[in-house]
Image (cartoon, rainbow, N blue to C red; front, side, top):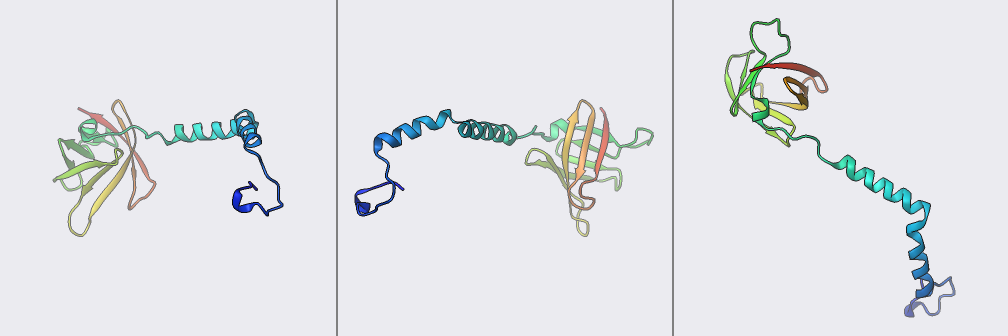
Length: 141
């Protein structure tokens, strides 16, 4: 499409440097260029990372049902206490939005995505066993 010294025998269409410069200068004003700019900007906005959490954001006792006498779990420092077995286990937040803790041999690692945390309401989504199941918890400090 563009002529060069090596293609001097090519009889196809050629563009001079002057004509190429005019074409390239005209591109920013075309509708296609505006659509491309809009697409790229919207991609950058969507690519921004959502809120990132750490264990200090999650500290406290969390209930899925405030009528129950005991919390479902509590986070103290870098440990999690689970009502299901009344044991303290180490835990962490990975990738800024995934709570991870290990239930030991035979059961293994648990991963729950932090969907939202506002004031004293936390929504966690199970990423392994009950994938996609979301549970809402309330915190009492």
